[in-house]
Image (cartoon, helix red, strand yellow):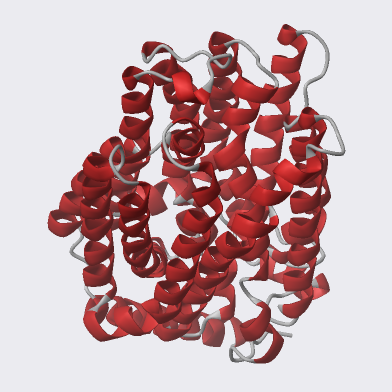
Length: 469
């Protein structure tokens, strides 16, 4: 019996995005505190940190295309092609993430454990994240549905920042009064990753019925029209100029922004007022939640590409302005970051909608359903950025004369300039380049996407009719 997907409504519509909320909480712990934990808490050597983290992120970056390819190419498991990974992989995320924030044995062994667990946690987390992201195409029946779901993801992701700002950061200081400092970060990693696991299971439950499972999934996976090989995956990328434009621009932006979130923590340790750090994160998250919520409406009104361009150039301008005031006024910097969050919230959901358009183009071009790979490919630039963070942060800190034993009040101008360069100057440059690439390189229009979707529907209807004859 042919599987029929219901229209988007009910639990699926209301619960989708909760796992992104939890993912953001957990990722924030890694983005803001992993490098700080390794340098200032575990006090491991900078060269060793650079080697361990860069190797972990490099291996993960190489594997990124493989992860998405596996989801696209492997036959559906018992609970569906995407939802199965959201059920099975989250417990592995918890185990590996907790061990990443550990300081076990001598320096060399501690670095080995941290690097290995960092790779494994990103690998297992990417499977669940990519599967969750591809549910946008699984649940949606139209471009407006995709835009709505992308906006929901971005809204929940931004909202997590408000919780993180006052539920995580202040409690790190409080927990240090009752347990060793190193154990504090391990405990925070355990709580946030366990919460992520639970939210993945909630979304798994809420999306039941939208993806073929059991015998229907096996029949779908065995269908010749659904079988996907390496050649199909390569074609979906190589023959997709619009996807390549986005990926090249995103790669450049990620390279320049690699150390931004880590530098944010160092900024409030060595330059800004530490008590304002939670306030900054709360305000930027609140603004991001608002702008993400309205992003779908903005994209529908003025176009997804235009929305992305406004967001990208707006973020670059805010980073540049922030770099000019960061040394003089913590409050003015926070104002710039709040403005940046507004543009980021407009940018994110509409960028996902552009990836969705690229997935439609790939299916129209190749005749194969490779949306898991196309949608998951957006993590490739992010992973490469993380790889470079493992190199960039220790490198810039070393060049700036960083020493974890130096009191924050005694930090020199070189250290402060290095932190601001990572935090604001480099991201401003990367954002401007990314915007220019999208402006001149991405030519896929909404009208053309709708035409391709109609052609796909007609083609598949004809195939079904022929198969039933």
